[in-house]
Image 1 (cartoon, rainbow, N blue to C red):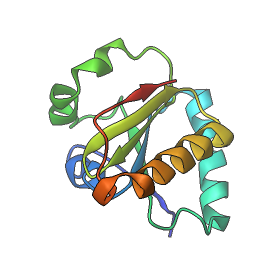
Image 2: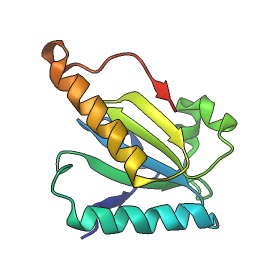
Image 3: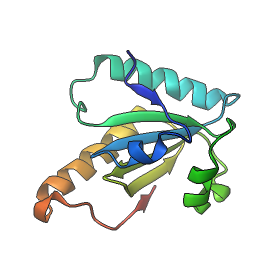
Image 4: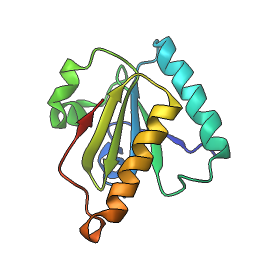
Length: 130
């Protein structure tokens, strides 16, 4: 079973509400998205560090995403795919355009360290766009 979950209009809210979630946005005909998906799948197959993090992929050119698009009006301004978001308990903590495991790992490590150091491990309200 792949740890990279298919996220769509029926499960996105539960997914982003997870304690930790990484959501990759892409399209079916996006070559960079396909490459990043392959990179993520290979990484997740061997990963032992991020077992508490859910990883998902949402294809924006598939139907049934009206509720996600209404809840995320910033999506209309995204012009580079893949686009990666990191959520903690429903709060968007970080986002970045493009792929790259080192970038993703660096952000996840930083955010998880901050969560461990913050009072009661609560997510902060800041969002980083890098």
